[in-house]
Image (cartoon, rainbow, N blue to C red; front, side, top):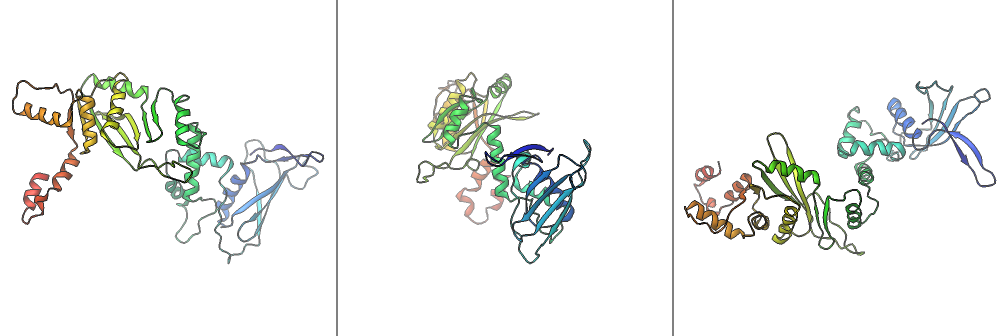
Length: 368
C-alpha cells in the first residue's frame, strides 16, 4: 500500500494528490484496527491524503471513515513517515459509537484482499475460512465486519476459479467451446448443448492408463449427480435435467488416478457407450477388469465397449458357459465385469424373502 500519485477533478480543475495504493490500504488498516480494538462497526474509509512535504504538514498521513450502521466517525493519522521496511504506526479515533444500534453490515470484499481470499478458497470451502477467522472469538462475541458470509466467499471463489480457467463467457456451453479451442485443446473432445454431454480427458491421463495397462489394470466407473448444477435452457428460466458426472478411476498400491470423465444429461446405454468408445478410439485398450454399481445402463455400455460389442445378456450367458465347462465359448471375453461389493450387499439386503420372520440369522449369513 505504498503511496502513489493520483489525479482527481474535472478537465479544467485537475489536481494531483499523493494517496495510499487503492484497493489495498483500507482492508489492511481496517483488519488491524478490528483485531486490536474488537469493535463491531463496519467502517467505510475515504479521504486518504499523504503529504509530500513533512515540514509543512502536521501529520504524514490522514484519513477518515464512517460506520454504515451507527454513523460513528473514524479519524486516523500517522505522525511520521516510516523507514523502508519498517511497520506503519497508525492512530485511530472512533467517536459516536451507538451500542444500542444493531450492527449487521459487512465490509466489502474488494481489491487485493479479494484476490488473496480467492486464492485461499481454491482448495478450501467457505465455512472453513469463516471458522479459521473466528477461532479467536469467545462464546457471545459479535462477529467482526471483516468476516464475510458464505455467499460472498463462494462468489469470490467462483470468480477466482473463472480467472484461473480463463472463463470470460457467462454461458457454460460457449465457455466450454472457447476452452476446447484454446487452453484446453486436446483435453475436451465432445460438447453437446441439448442434451448436455461433455467428454474430456487429458493426454497425461492416457499416458498413465497405457503404462498401467501393460500389467493388470482394474477400472472403476461410477456417476454422481451432486456436483454439477442444472443449466438454464431458455430466457424463461427453463432448467435442464439432472447432470451427472461419470468418472473412470484406476488404483494401484501407491495412488489412485482418474482416467476419463463425462458430463451427461442423459443416462442411457448408448450415451455411456459412445463415451467409452470415443475414449478407446484415442489409442487405449480395454482394461482387464471393470468395477461398477448395479446400473443396467452402465453395465450394458461396459459390455458393449470392452467386450467386443456383445450385450449384457450375452455376457452373462457367456460366463455361465465358462462356469459350466463349455469348451467352445461363443465370444472372447477381453474384460471381466463385476459389481462393487457394497452395491452387491445392498441388493441382497433388499430381497423380499428377508421380510419373513426368523430370517435374521440367514440374512446375516449371506450379507456377512
